[in-house]
Length: 205
Image (tube, rainbow, N blue to C red; front, side, top):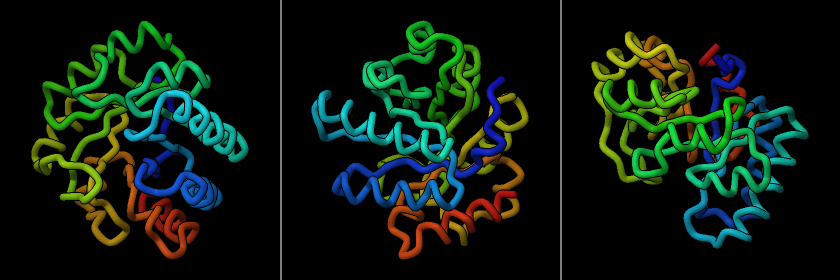
């Protein structure tokens, strides 16, 4: 089983930001101790995405951080990323595992025990469960705390909560059922990204 204990804060990029600005913000997050970055981009062609993914990967390597690509297994393979994150509408995890091999990281978005069991059986390394709170960056329904508890009790994978999470709404109840948090705007829109990243890490220690 791959270890995510040093990667409790997981930054997902925002494709609405100009890319050069995003690079600067990601580096600030990496300086703060964020160790897991997911590149998510829905609006560019494959060549541009590969170029951007390679730049982000090299930046992550500079800070000894892990780099994943959202959805696009072809891009992940092209740049030799550390892995991918898959949604329920993306390629099946079992197929992705065959393509990527056993050493790459695969994360899967889930919101039910059934989806989580399938992800485990198909070879996922971690789960992204949510939305924890409603969010402006993704149109998805909010998961119930009872469902999170059920997943936590039955699925032996690292569980990230995603969706509307910031440093002021990580409750003790959430900390009991989540192993880490995945964030977008709480870090990328912060006036002090390094400070915000450190604060997330302190809360999750």
